[in-house]
Image (cartoon, rainbow, N blue to C red; front, side, top):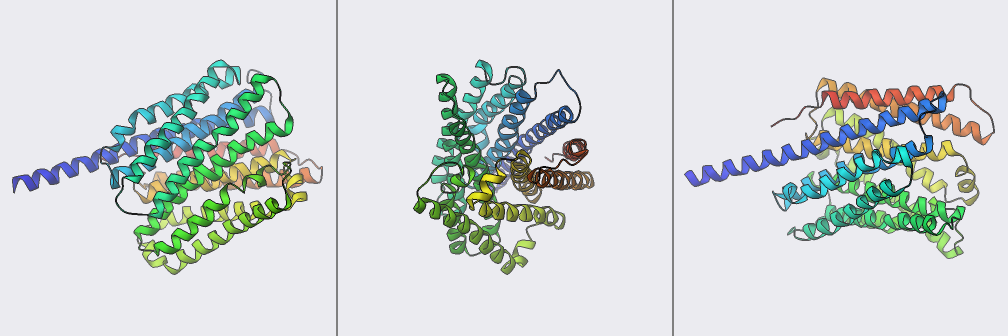
Length: 421
């Protein structure tokens, strides 16, 4: 009897330790998101008004690198390790602690070097460290997922995610080679940049989120065979879809039609997933609190818009036109990073009770979502105006206000976030 009680006590302590570790690292990630928002406000202020002390290009590098490493990658690594802690190794956080700390160190290293020197020795060192961390995480995680005794499509998503994260570094190394040899050709430079962005946004970020979502669907008792086919459609489309991000790259006609087919495949996969969700909504609703459903709705809308825009970019003339206008590109990238990835990560944390849903958190989320909507609306207006070569007055000031709203929402999430033990 004493042994049974001791075993239950040990299990209780392990569960508390796992929850504590997850909440701690997610709290760190949310704080990093706040720093990203503060930098975003600074960048928008410099565009609208004078701020000579800030180098816009250097600070933009810090903004993007820290957003990727300090916020998204930090949060996704935490949630993926939490999955292992529940299903494979209850001591997973202890094993991955050095990797998480190394990722955090790389993120802050880039934060404190890029604004002052741009791409130089120190910032490149920390960038390289972040790539090494992604390799180490990919190898460790792949091996640990393989140790899980049962098959799940969730595991396939997670394996694809860490693989695409490692693959994205090819774009970084291509850039480094061009800079080292001083042979920078515009199209090759952009192709390398978009290679990195594509396999981060549409690879590592998206597949990790899809894996977390797939796990919720499986827990709700949904048809695993259908979910497996959705993975095949999404995964098979990822590599060909890169050419939608780099329309200036000459490709054979047969490859172009493969790219078009890939764009259609992701739309079809998304429609199939929505059908599965609607057919099994009663089971799913029991897993998701009412407020979180309202958070997931804009995620679904943003993801639908993303896929439709991606499909539209398969038209060469339209793709070449839109990629030439900065507001459209920025609007698309923010749509994915904020409207799809960031919102989903926070929604998942709410469903899993990693973030406790308090009245303060609800208010912070509402303000955050309002900021995303306002930011996207203004960028869309600016993009359409640029297409017709017209300037919309006070757009920069309005975008600064949208950045402030976003920052206020994220500040609310940080200030009202409470950990439970």
